[in-house]
Image (cartoon, rainbow, N blue to C red; front, side):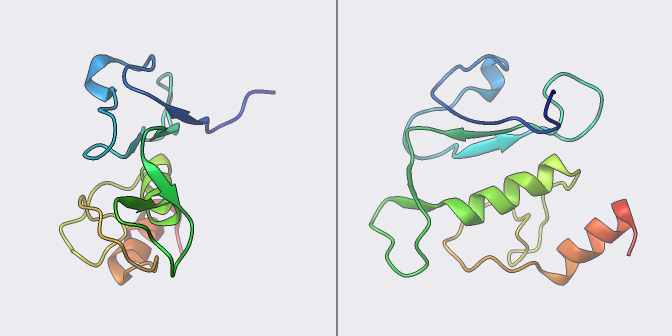
Length: 115
């Protein structure tokens, strides 16, 4: 059985084109592909070199909240694009935050999939 979404942790160039290569610790944390028929559609890739954490309370300096990044990337995997709204989970910039969908995130999901 072939999965709809492949989730991988990878380093540097990992087979989906130089444009999508990871850069080591910092900067590019992860990426995902919009859904569709193209190879890799819906797939989510995380940079293995990041210091990932899942704790809401204990986040060592230089760590990256896995849940916040995963929610954002899975948003792309279901068809959401970046938002200009800073509090949106689809904001293009990572901020350590509690993961809570913004009204605009919900509206964009409903626009794609219905209420």
